Structures are given as C-alpha cells and as structure tokens.
Amino acid sequence: MLEIVMLIFMAKSIGRIAEKKGRRGGGYKALLVLLWFGGEIAGIVAGVLLMPGEEPVWPYGCGILGAILGTLAAFSIAGSLKPLSPQAPRPA
Image (cartoon, rainbow, N blue to C red; front, side):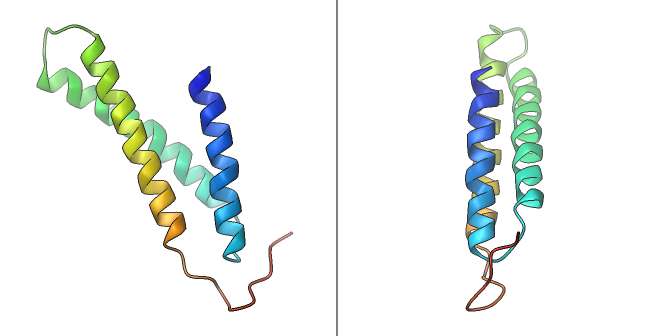
C-alpha cells in the first residue's frame, strides 16, 4: 500500500516537471509506472537468478532496488527534457 501512495505522489511530481517544460505529463506518468514495475520485476528475476535457494528477502530487496532505479531513470528522462519554447505555455 505504501508503494502505491509513493507512486501516486511521484507521478504528480513528474507530471509537474513535464508541464513546466511545456509538455503533457500523462506520458511521463505512464513511463514512471512502467519503469517502476518493470524495474521491480527485473530486480526480482535478477535476485532469484543470482541467489537461488536463498532467503526470499533477497529477491524482494533486489525488486525494490530495481523499482528505485526505474524511478530514477524516469525522473532523469523528464528532467533532461528541453522546453518546447522559451515561453512554453502550460497545457490545460
């Protein structure tokens, strides 16, 4: 449940970043969600493959790390956007 609350908060934040640069935030919110869950799944798979038969804590920890890396990638992409124009209007 806490992950979902954090994801909602971060989606609003990444949407504001994109809108400040004159872009619509919906696509970047979707990118955040995809990279979050994709990173989490990839991390779990990597944790299972790297440490077979170990405690189930390791794959979960690797999943959280993957989600963090996915989130950092999404914010990095949104942060590196160039404004569409010097006086970019905010979309309605």
